[in-house]
Image 1 (cartoon, rainbow, N blue to C red):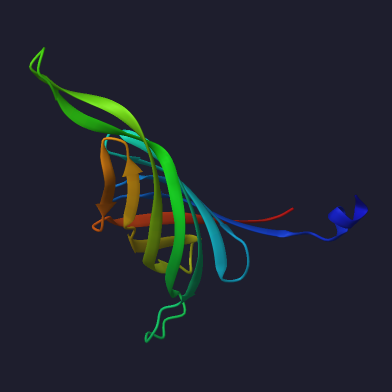
Image 2: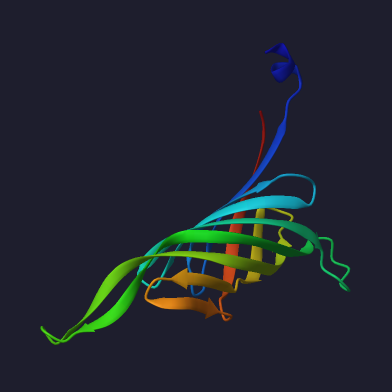
Length: 155
């Protein structure tokens, strides 16, 4: 117990919001100096999905700004989404919620501000998922903007 108290452990967290095809909330934990694990709770197609991504951040290639970085990662998601169908008996369109599971890629260009612990990123997050009503759904056009606040604490 005393070893935990005397050896403070650094915990770096980032929490933010994301826009795009799948907007929502994100929390990123820095595993090492350049690696991270991120959890996102996003809303897409009238459903909610939970994403977990594992990636790394590096200086942006070819640009010599110390606060400009490039992040890349892979992961997966589970959740539900609404599937639209036409009810011929009542002659109306209805939505059924169906489960989804999928794989994701993540690529972003981000800039961290010096004055306040805030970062802004433009990201690209394509995905492929298995949906019961159509065998597979692939979206290559999920571009978004993420704003994160950086928390650093001693445990």
